[in-house]
Length: 450
Image 1 (cartoon, helix red, strand yellow):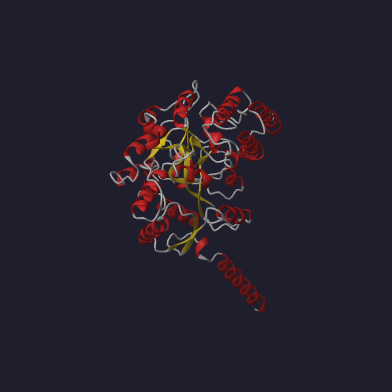
Image 2: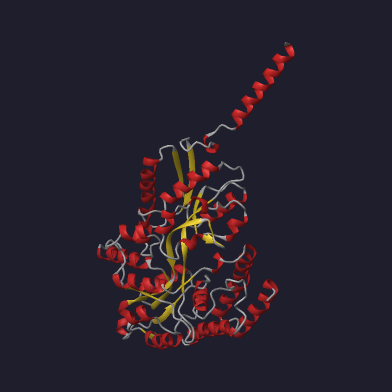
C-alpha cells in the first residue's frame, strides 16, 4: 500500500508540474485568454501618438482580453535599441519599419501568410502588399508608400519661366534639367548666390535616385547581379560633377548637413531641393501659417513636388517602398495564439483608419479602404498629389525584397564602405568620376565576385 501511495503521489506531482508549465496566458491556445502584445513605433507624423491610442481603443472594443503595450521611440536612438533587443532574441511583437532581409535571417521575423485572409489581401492596392514581402513571403503590412522626389520653390521656378506643371506630368531628362538649371542659377541683388539644386553631403539618396534613373535599380539587380560596373555609373557620376562644375550646386556640398540644405531652401538660396518627400507640402503649409501668425520669420513658400530627372536614353524610375509594421516572435516562443493575437493588433494598426498616416504625410495609400475613407480630405495640394500619383506609376520596386539574405547584406556593406566615402570624395573634388567608377568596379569584383 505504501508503494501504491508513493506512485500515486508521484503521478499527481507530475500532473501538477505539467499543468504549471503550460499555464500563462501568452502560451494558451484559448483565443479569449489574457495576452499582451508589445509595439515599438515612432512619431510617424505630428499627431501619430494620439492616432495610435485611438486605434488601440477601437481594437480593445472587440478584443478586450488583449493588452496592447506601446513604446514611442526616437528616430535617432530607436533603431539601435531595436537592434539590441533583436540580437538578444527578445524583440517587440511589432516594430515600425520596412521589411528587412536581416530581420528574416535571425529566424525571429514572423511569417504572416497563414493569417492573411482573402478580404485583407483584396483590400490592398495592386503592388502594395508586396512591399511587405521578402522573396515572396509576407513579413510586414505597409502603412503607406514612402516616395523620394525633388522639391521646388514655385516663385523661383516661375520667375525663371519654368513650366513646372509639365515637369510634374511628363517628367524631364538630364539634358532638360541642365537647361533649366542654367536659368535658375544666378547672383541675387544682395550678392548671395541662388543655386539651382542643393543636396546634403552625408546621405546616399542623391546618387541612388540618379543612378536609378539611369537604368540601375540598385547596386545589384533582382537577380543579384552587380550593376555599378559599367558606363552607366560613370555617366551618373559625371552628371553630378557637371552640376558642381557649372555652379548649379554649391561647391561646399560635401560639408552640407541635411538641416543646412533645408535652411537654404527656406531662405530662397536654392530653387530645388533633393531629396524631398511629399510631406514637405504639408510641412511648408504649416510653416506658412506660422509665418502669418508671427511665430516664424521668413518668406512663405509654395512647394512644388518634382520627379527626379532621368538620363536621356533611360526611363523614369521613382524611389518608393513600404513602411509599416513588421511582426516578430521571440527565442522564448509565446505560442501560436500569441502569434495570432500579434497579427490581430497588426491589422488593426494598418487598416482603413490607419490610412490617416498616409494622408498626413501626403503619401500614396496602400489600401482601397483607406482611399475611400479619406476621399476629399487630402492635405496635400492637388497639383502635388497628382504629381505623386504620376511618379508612383514609375515605381522602382526595392531590390532588397527580391535578394537573398547574403546578397542584401553584401549590398548594404558595399554602400556603407565603398559608395559613401566615394560620393563624399566626388562632392569635395578629391576624386574624379573615372577614379570612383574604377573603384566601384574593383571593389564590386572583390565583394560580389562579379
